Image 1 (cartoon, rainbow, N blue to C red):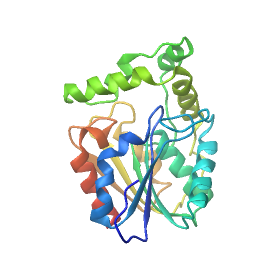
Image 2 (cartoon, rainbow, N blue to C red):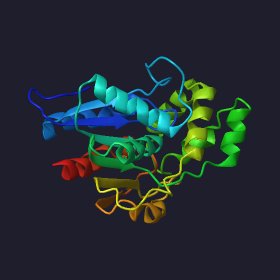
Image 3 (tube, rainbow, N blue to C red):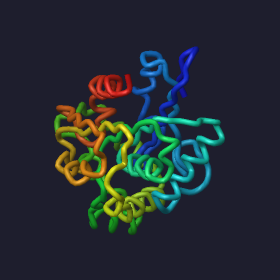
Length: 237
């Protein structure tokens, strides 16, 4: 958590499948610049949170709503990455009075999880090629090495549970007109959720702004933290 001395707004950051709160390390610096409280959460079964990974996006969304009640947060902006963006969308659709605005990174209305990835995880294998696909091809080798080391430490059952939850997520049948202000952020070279996916989601988010970050893949907030922070700052301010 990061918070300036005086704040009346909260930004809650929700990581992606198999992720953890450390993925938002670069975004915590925005707290002072925006005069906003920033909380990066570890979802159940992830990072330093106990319990097991939850099996549906809906369950994760209920966890986030319970957390806001526990912290006595009446209005919140949600920053979600990949699976976390699906969680944020579900919270906003189910409890619009709670959500002030959305920042969604690498999102779409229905995820397409590669069958080979699910097959590998069901066999207890962690395919390193998936990590490589999550970053753009010219990424700093040190970032990629760190990502591979982290990936090797994630329990396979957590990865499988999360990706099955993503596979089942479908925002298709929502009524158009989720009127919350929304920033859609994509890495220009995202191979997991290409920016073209935004076209089908845009009709459901009439009050959205699209920003595409150059030289970035799916992990844009780690690959290009300054450009990501500038886009978030511009939107939230």
